[in-house]
Length: 255
Length: 261
Image 1 (cartoon, rainbow over the protein chains, first blue to last red):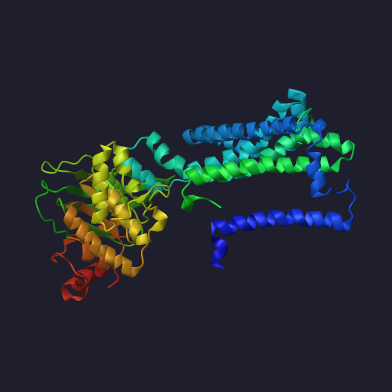
Image 2 (cartoon, rainbow over the protein chains, first blue to last red; image 1 turned 90 degrees about the horizontal axis):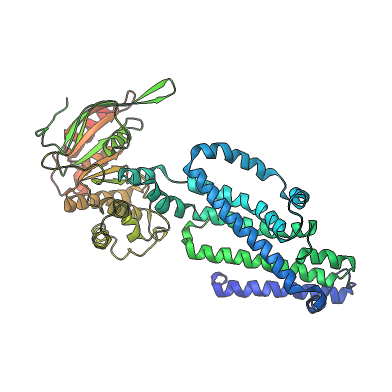
């Protein structure tokens, strides 16, 4: 049983599980004689990629820009605000409760408003991805920065260490596991935010394309769009995991 | 009752009638009172007493982190000057190593904070790791070490900037009984080799007697110092001394002071 724990074994099983899903999908459609407009076969889905009218490249690039743009904006603003809060107790006391309330707003409900304010296009959709991704990053980072053992604080103070030293040597590296757990949640939310934004109002992007092909019941293209969106999400999540592996020592990682 | 040995002027630590009161709202809580004792340079003093007797408070006063409300506290003498900014090493009940740093880099933390020349500090950190029995673990992460080994690294960290005074707050309290006895022997060896003045807080009566050149007994409710006496047992101390009558005389004396005899 221990052999299942090796990286090679885990990769093999991961690939096999995905291949198995595609196979099950194929068999279900073929044996069940499912109509193409209800559920296309894997081949038909792949074929949709070669319809030039759908401008997959452009639409993929637009959605990717919204997701990644919104995500990295959320990362920058979230971490920065959390830093400000740990440096200033009054600011935290005033704004943190406010942000917890704002976090309760279903960001999707802001969509129509964002369109009123910023029309439609890449920017409002980026803003949508940002608004939904920023809170988990901000809240977990603020939490992580606060989690310093009082004795470590004593240790630094007994050596007359500066606040900056405390921050750089203890607080920030100590908060990294928290920041990453927020970043993982946010990566999933950013994808959802961008796509919902495109549903609500846009003239480009994979979400926009899905609405267009829905009219003609081109289900293979809809499937393909979902797959591409998922792959964008996987890419973002994978980057976060890689960065975490690089920056955070194994034992310090949060689940 | 208090037997004060040596010339107070030569003492490295000199406490007279130290008192500390914590205030929460209108309520006052006496954390320590009547604390008077002297510690000569190179002594290992045990502060022993039950929870709430003020031993940790006393340690915080010595570390300069908390002010005292009354009495006199002096650390350092003409012969042994003391710089409060860099002459204190601290060891806590938990090792509190930084998880993301290798052992050597953990030991170097105080040197970094003080801005000491790093090449020399690195050399010294390696020597200290060898001293505490961790040669070969320099590049490991804390999670790769047992609790006892992590605490050894924490002791090396407390010594890396060559402080004159090391404050230890129940450093072996979280270890199992056998590891604790082993660490007691190790601490005595490290103390002999480093020549530091150590203030060792514990609630283990036997541990206090076994380690100390001197034991300061504190009682709770009200928190005050009850006694201060030398332990006239020879060094190096061995575990079988704990079974000897002379050792029992000291532990019985402490039990009596704590009202447990």
